[in-house]
Amino acid sequence: MTDNVSPSPIEDQWEFLSSHGFSARFAGTWVEGSDPESAAHILRADPASRLDCDFETAMQWYDPYSSEEIVWVGVHAPEWLHIISLSGVGIAPGPLSADGRRLFYLEYDDGEGGVHGLSYWRDGKSRGQYGRNSNTLGELEVLFNRHNVDATAAQDDESELNSYLHLLGHVTGRFIDQDWLMSPRTLYRIPDDAWSW
Figure (spheres, rainbow, N blue to C red):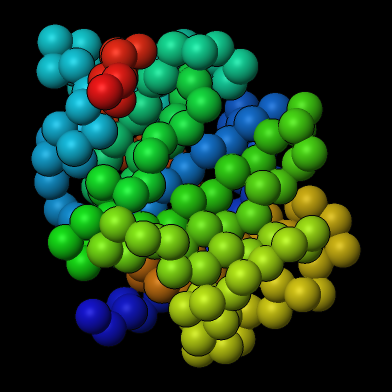
């Protein structure tokens, strides 16, 4: 699939996110798809917990160090969805990336080592991981080169996060901005036993 043509981004993507309440922790997933309800089903979210809401309402559930898994799911760009983990440890990327779907996962945790790097998944398997402290670039290397994003130049968490967010904007065709943040999405709770076997 060809990447979309990208609009001009807000230069400091991370500053924009952190200024809207994500300075302690941000866990975001970008995955190919157009049906948020289907993604919620794959995540085994509780359909009875569904709440269509705006950003301000969703952030009432922001509790980054809670064990309760709360996600806010919605359309990011044509053929791309975005999932913000507002609470809990983060989602399992494997099932969401099945059937050829590309998925990117980015996590920042101020209390647990800062940036956890950028993960790339496709067909239920990890295809690359990059971070300042460790990396197995895999297929990510092609994307970094194609979009002229030099993550190796990052000297701190902020510049590292910005390099990843700029890459994701190029790949998906949409950067983070006010319209993106204020677009309504759907809140779900993922039950504690959703992935128990």
